[in-house]
Structure formats: C-alpha cells, structure tokens
Image (cartoon, rainbow, N blue to C red; front, side, top):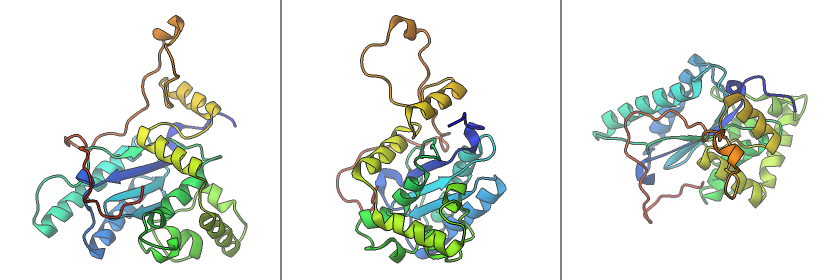
Length: 259
C-alpha cells in the first residue's frame, strides 16, 4: 500500500451517544430532521456519507471528509442544530449529546466494508431487528436493496464489489448477512472508542509519519531511552462540541442500543 494521498481523504467511522446514554431520538420526525440536516451539511462541507444507522440513544456514521477540518465542523454544526431542534420541540434545556463524538482513521483497503457491515448490523446486535433490512433508519436499504436515499454516497470500495448495481447490491447484502467475526467486531469497536487508526502496522506507521503523532495503542513496557524525547503524541481527538461535561457512566436503565 502506498502512502495515503492525505489523511483528510480517508474514511472515518464515527459514533456519537446521547448524554448518560439516554435517548436522543423520541419520534420518527426527529430522525427525519437529523438525516436532513446531516445530508445538507455533508454536501456543504464535501463530506460524503457512505453508511449510517440511527439507534435509540446513539448514531453511527461512516464518512469521508475531503477538506481539512470538515469532520469536526460537520459534527459540531449537526450537533448544535439538532440539540436546538429537540430543545424547542420538547420544551427542554441542556445538552443532549455526551461530551464528544468518537472517530478513527480507517484503512479503506482492509476494513472499509467491515465498517459498513458493523454499522448496518447494529440493530441486529441490539435485538431490535432480525434482519438489517427490517430496520428503516440505516443505510442498508440503499446499499443492499437499492432504496432511494439522498444521503448515501457509495465509496469506491463498495462500487468495486460488482460492475452492475443489482449484482453489487446482492454481493453486498450477502456480506452483511454473513456477519462479522467477533475479533473484527471488537477490533472496530476498540479502534473507534480509543480513537486509534484502524489498519495494519504499516498503515498506522504511515499515518503517524504524516501526523507526527501516535495513532495506535502504545507499546507495552517502558520506552527505550532513545524514544523518550521523541515519543509521538496521542491519537488526534475530534474537536469537542462546545463546553460539555465529561461522560458519566450509568448502570442499567438503558434502552436497546447495540454498540
């Protein structure tokens, strides 16, 4: 794999959760509003969305920012718009989202389609649907069934599954229904939550070379003396959405959410 043309042109899986893991969608009209705002912002900021799912208390997205800082700008604007809408509609005040969204750089050669599947299978893992086709608030209808969805823009790796759309959708749906190996599921989850680059060692090295900072887990054990002064910084974090309080852990009382 050659050096990526630019970090900003790589895809990012993103997850954003409701504050204290409480619901962030209360009716279908809320989901329509969120998706409409996301579509307009993605177009405005040149940040195409390849896959998504709206769960009860969190959101998963897979998108490719094509301009510097497009991802934090999109998530900040989207979060603020949606919070204003919810507060006005339900006569509430305060924050809706937890402190920050989580995101990681993705090696589109090795893990992109797995992230597609990871996102669209979320309702199945949460016990909210037996088949991802039964859940209306995801990109599966567009990617696997050909349903019109103006938000979804296919990635080149998805397009490479087959030359003709019907065969491409059939191939993709078969991949989704085959599920993910538990190890790959955990690898994606850990990378997004830890905001670490998702790819092999060579991919992470190339990204660290470009960013001059660490984008993977730190090596186990004490660093060599020669490494202490040149230790790379921690993985880049998404820009926080305003001054939000830190995420607080709660026990029980959660609606079905998947992961």
